[in-house]
Every structure is written in structure tokens, then in C-alpha cells.
Amino acid sequence: QLQTIGQVGGLGQGERIYGVRFLGDVGYVVTFRQMDPLYTVDLSDPTAPRVVGELKIPGYSAYLHPVGDGLLLGIGQDATDTGQALGTQIALFDVSDAANPRQLAKRTLDGAQAEAESNHHAFTFDPEESLGILPVSAPEAQGDSTQMFGGALAFTVDRQAGIEPRGRIEHPMGDQIRRAIVLGGTIYTLSEAGVEATDATTLRMSDWAPFA
Image (tube, rainbow, N blue to C red; front, side):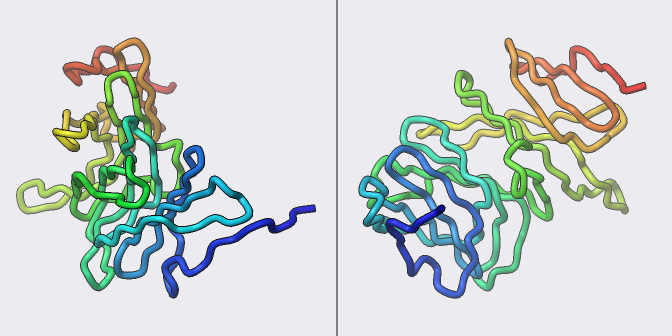
């Protein structure tokens, strides 16, 4: 049987919980309707959890990923002050002081969507290189028309430099990249069309294996 031994309430009243992450004795909770409160919750006493910090910013993070050195990366949507989604947002938070969480940097891709918002397997982070790989779908202007980019964004994370774009990864036929992994200096990305090997330093394709 599951029995309640403690609880904490009053988080984002009238809002919806979009993301939760537990790291040691601290929990991080994101709620959203118009603004994005990021709450830090002290869980050291399971019978009496308590909110110790709060940060209110536009938009929301649907997935939270630890990136070391008291840093937390959020993947979600940027939004207006009235709650209208604007596009994929990557946000870097300093949570080294649980009572005073701070946003250090953010990047927004207008009109984009990222599967990582609903499935964390769609985001990859290599801690050795502080390298993030995020598959996205985004509209792009091509002359007088608009086409969809279905590749992946590569970026590095640093407390001082923030979020630094490294480049983009695309498959030969433009198919939507779904997953990525970094192994031995090579980024392997997967779409329904095949698997691509990309040099993690230059972001140049080194090999392509189409599915028969």
C-alpha cells in the first residue's frame, strides 16, 4: 500500500505542473499558465517537505536536466506574459543556492517544437564536453515559402558563457531526427530514414547508413 507521509501544497495555484526533477535532497518543480515558477523543495525530511526557493519567468520548462556544478538545464517553450507559446526554449538555471534559483541564460527558436518536452529520451547531454543535442522541428523561410527543419541543435553549456550554439545536424533526406547519442567523439543521430555519424567537434557528417 502507498501511504502519504508528507506533502507540500500551494505550488502554482490554478496552474499545471509541467516538469519535476529530484536531485539528492532537493526537488525542482515547474508550473505554468502564464508565467513559469521554478520551485525548489527541501526534501531532507520526507515527513515535512518545504518550498525554499522560487523563480518566476515567462514560458516554462517541461524537462529539467542536471548539467553539473549546480546547474540545471530546462527544455520547454518560451511564452508571452499572457501565456502564448512562442517556440522551443533552452534555459540554464543556477540552483547552487536552493533558496535563490537564478536563470543564467536562455535561447529561443521561434515556432519550434521539441519532442524532449514530452519524452526525455529525445534529449542527449555529454557531460565530458558539456555538449547538448536537441532534436527539433522548426519552420524556416526559404525564399517566398516556408519549409520545416527537422534536424538537431548542438550547443554547449557553461556557467560563464551560458548556452553557446555549436551548429545543426541534418540528415541527407531532411527526415526528422528523433534520437542522438555521443560516443568517442562522434554524434550518432537516428531518424526513420537511417543513422548518421557526425564529428562532435566539426559537426561534419562522417558516415550515413540508410535503412533499407
